[in-house]
Image (tube, rainbow, N blue to C red; front, side):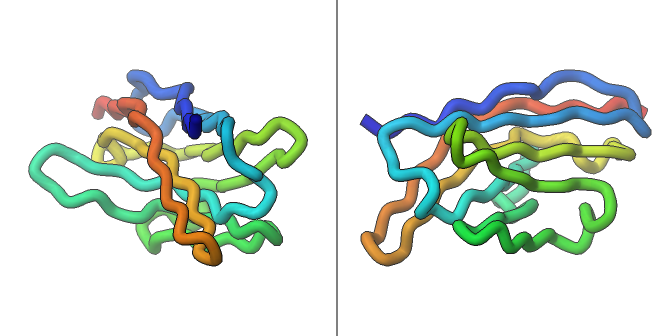
Length: 117
């Protein structure tokens, strides 16, 4: 059974930091491209950051230089370090695991991040 379990969300003041974690089980983690997405009320889910199996990273423009994605294959965990948070970063953040070669695409249940002004 595949599980992606996010943690680390919460309430923080603007300018603060949070680190999200996503622990994966039931998949060969090291072969998966991992990603963080977010969805604010009334908005579509959007890409935040991805990290490939070879640790190449990609970020949406609005978080470049503030957010940093990393992975620990020994712990089957992907992280999102979020710095200089802004109220517009408020959203539910979702972890995603994709392995295109076998057409696998999994999602976590989400963790709420709220940034107060």
